[in-house]
Image: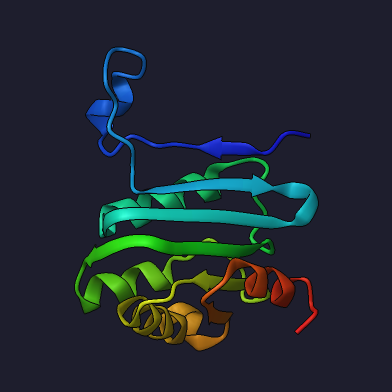
Length: 147
């Protein structure tokens, strides 16, 4: 089975205009790999609360997604997060992933590492396993149970 790769426009107006010109891409794209029970999400540029909310909504609505899947959240191309503490808490609390899933965040800069750790403490009250890695190979090994 070929995994789905989702590219979402940034606004509802753009969604209605699919195929009718240039579509700006949302800064979060994801691939669901059902056979691996894994979601791979990639961030680029600047993300805001609406971007993460749309990402969560699309995951939850996808028939191939299961809340128990693990996630690789690749934030290496993330430039900035435009949301305050209250928005970050709201996003963390509405995660579509279960308490049993694990998230591996890939980032190497100090801001990304700090944000990932704060987010991990907020997700489901810190009950979900979230770890930060500099390299995707380390994250895959951890999710596979090798470290």
